[in-house]
Length: 135
Image 1: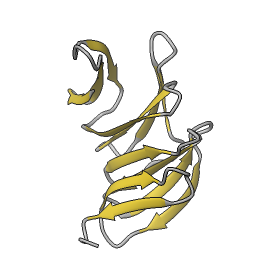
Image 2: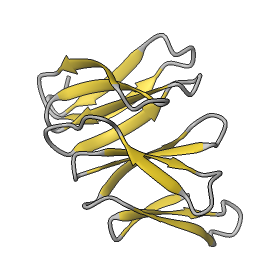
Image 3: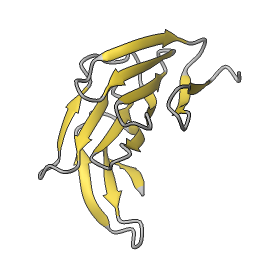
């Protein structure tokens, strides 16, 4: 289970809720978290306008930011079923896709309002996004 904590995130064991790790690196609130399907990486988004990728197999955990950033807070992230692509939604009214491997922005799509949630379809061929415009 994940939770916000002092501009970072904690990884807790699901059975006992004990803290297994504390991840720090964002300059503002962590807004969303998503594991890759293989559990190797954790992706975090923040109100500091950034997305970070955490290598959970490295000790200590290493993290890196995407090569670009949103122009406003990042509200949500999701990871494709194949674990290769990240999508993010932001208060800058965009949805962006990113390469997990190199952090490059692949595509950017404007929306009519602040994007509050994103999801991949089970096959990874569609992306859904919800926004503050009630549509």
